[in-house]
Image (cartoon, rainbow, N blue to C red; front, side, top):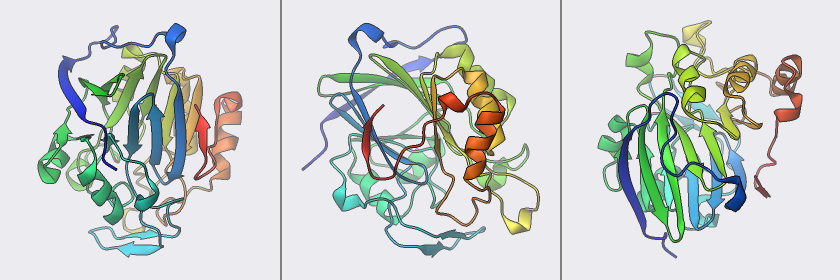
Length: 281
């Protein structure tokens, strides 16, 4: 089976106080199913469009050599051979295996289109398109059209960008809702611009409070408390935590997620997805 033919049309840059074409209409909502596969990998079906985020699909624990080596402690909920044809991959960055591993690269190479950072698109080639923050594209597969906008992300404290490399988040607008995928990011002021441009229904947040022994107290992803603060700023109806287990550098106890959202008065917005099970969003 092959992916549905996908068209990607550049729309320009979203401005504060506006939304891009294709803004959701709750009257004619498109059905959406979501399957959490582990780490930051989510399989979405929006009408005729199949989307995969940050494909880390290797099935076994393992080591990934790098300047800061990564160690996976558990495999994905299911592997690349169990996926349906993927129309669109949303890739926050390509330089770390917990966002794009060996099996994930194979899936991305077969996908109808890949949206990512300009730097990652240059390395991946093929059907990859790079987007700077706030740039938007309209993506169509079959009878379904979504608008995807790249959002700011910073994979560590200010000043670490030359080491961690560029990353991006995404907003996906479809007929009936708006989704936000944070990508690997820490909490910083540029994220506040998302709420100025979009009314987010569901926020998928990369948590885990990633740390590395050699970098001491420096954090490279959102903590649970950071995630709750961002959720409040976004005003999201529900929040799905991602990127919080199965890798050694995710140092925060996953139990802190529920505790932090409860402390912020947002417990009713938190939604945990069981790995490998498709659910209506």
